[in-house]
Amino acid sequence: MESQKGMGSKTKGLAAVALVVVAALVGMRLEFDSIQSPDWILRDSKAVEGYQWLANNTENDTVVLAWWDYADGIKEIGNREVVINEASKNIQNTVGGYADSGKPWHKIEYALWYPYESEEKVNDVASFFLSENATSAGEIAQKYGANYALAMSDDMGKYFAVLMANGSHFTDYVNVPDYHRSGNFDIMSNLKKETIYTKMVAGDNIEGFSKEFDNGQIRIYRIS
Image (tube, rainbow, N blue to C red):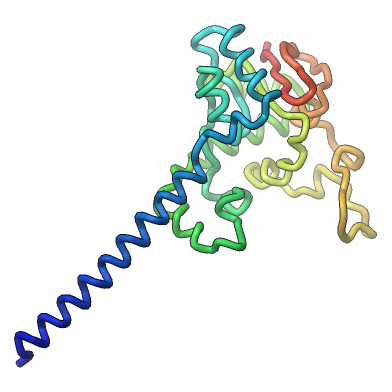
């Protein structure tokens, strides 16, 4: 039978381990909250200009269809609702914080606290952007009551994530030369298909859409 002294030592040891675990979790939660802070949206003055335009020039019940990265700006500055707020679990590897190879513990933080969006919604938003005409895109927008769509001029860097969310293959939409190995790759110059997404990123006029705001960085279209 264990002595009271031995049991006391074991109890103290377990308590010390519990304190270390709690302290680690608290520290991880504070770090995770700092990663998720919407403060970063204020760093891009051009984007802020677009969000402010939404607040001042659209109806209060406006719903904006945009990739999840811009939900904070649309909601916090534009005071408008969005279709998706976050990434879905099946594209978590494309999320900067989650995929930070220098901080592998982020994966634990995301597993514990990240409010993943439903795969159906993220898939639908991706399908909207990958539509090749306004008719199919409009049907998806109507499903969610969205009457505006938003994209940034540098959004082609997100094209892989959009395609992944939709279950599509990059090479079905973009021609990747056999000789390409490293360095900069211009997706726009190697498109196989033009989609709503590529047209919005380029700031093109789109049949069935009305471009309402464009300051060279953020493009906002009304969905007819």
